[in-house]
Image (cartoon, rainbow, N blue to C red; front, side, top):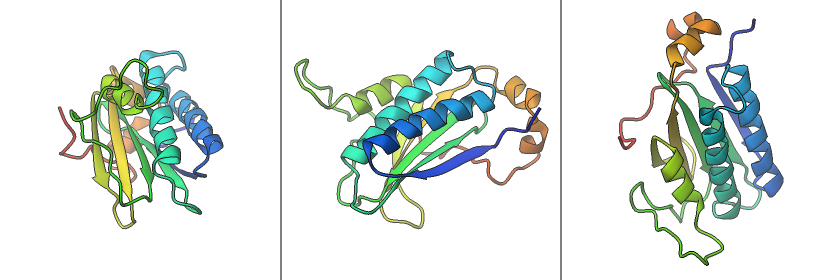
Length: 170
């Protein structure tokens, strides 16, 4: 049995195809980590990635620039980060997301993120222009999952592992 990666980071083209690929990569990585395809966690993470990637492509696109997907397994959860290079617009903060009217054709992406994520935040990218939207979905049985898939190396201090930011909402 192979040791799962502590994190997956992938730059993708800021196109609808790139957004679809982000979702497929996510589902594959979750399966590698031992999170079943049809589990509640897998489905929630897939929807969050799909919505954040679609937002990066639609609202955060800068011509000639990609967006980035990062997945990681901090203690007790799956962490999703989708970043883009647009600096002049920031999405609303957690708790400030406007719910669309029933006939609106847009505006449901962050509503879904807020409903499915246990925590989420909007942060400035480190060392690069733009922003990242980070979300976490709690993972019941995380310790057993990590131990059962070679997690001893990860728990011993794998530098690619990252703890969640302190500013993520409870």
